[in-house]
Length: 505
Image (cartoon, rainbow, N blue to C red; front, side):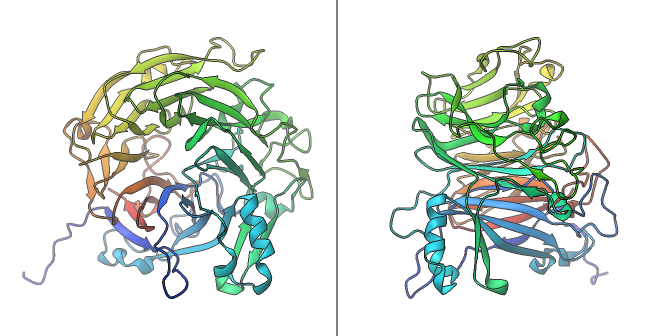
């Protein structure tokens, strides 16, 4: 019959478009580019637990998203599905299906002091920007869950961001479960709220801030705190890795305590930093006695400039480096038998991959086990390397082999990529204004994406990330498949816009 419309809609679709904040004045400045977006791996409310959320209320919890770019603040968003619409219904495309709220901004100490000084008129538009100097923005952004216990959702959120020139800022967001229990923090960061009601904005200054003069500020990665059982007992700090123009990677102390089993760094002998089992009224300590910015290791100097960094999710002290000349170096700890070793942290290069001659801007290990290493270059190619032989080892001594290459992944630079948590897909974004989703198998070899979002931004698509409600299974390894509305893909671009996509199949 002519009145029947076949249901041919894909599970991949645009859900929401987040516009940049409106400019002020008769001639407002153009929107600031957004360079990086990251979904938080931590729960956004105390109601989220390690158990699977109820199928009747999949939208009761929200996704926490951070966006960094050319502005002087990192904006914190909360994304919530407003309805329980069927993923096959056409009205899921309606932007009203998602609620987006931004009530917090992370700022540097200098910017925070400027906001406090000019907060007398209680207006967001007047105090939110440092206007006396050029804005460097935040070129690199990373988030980690500071926890190493059995609870899959507990832990404080640690945010690290760097500016051009090597200035690094770090913030800690307390686990909502701890807030609900009334746990106090011995060394919490200052914050101030500007505006009233729906127009209010809370600005938070860093817990730690330092500058590494040799770092470019464009590449940064947090060493996974979840692998703390395998780090030296001498390493009490969360470490960040920064790329340098001379090809070196420097690992620095942040001054923030890393979670440790047995309560070595917590307020009592039975708790872990960020552990939801902490007792009511307990005081926990976030900061260590270390000097933030202290360099503990310098790795791989004398090579081409570092363009990208990625830590292995399961092998301790192992990371990959993408360089300007197209090479990819994989480094691992020099200790081969026992990671509870004495002495300084040291590394050695385990592999050098030389399949590209163009800058490697995009680099990441697959989730959750790091079986694959993905790399994207400025020639539009997307490479997939098999690193699964190393999954049972304590270093990367086993072979890492090229298994597939999408020769025309993008018509231009591959700007960024993000593996899906299901372990079977990876998303890329490029200078051709597109976002593409790839199957980790034959899809790469045939240069055929699972889905392609074309023309999603006006200009370069700088960043892309994938996330789901913490505690929800998204299929593949670790559980049964959840609905496509739980898994979200986010892109950001030169136009200051962020796009939200669904990732169901």
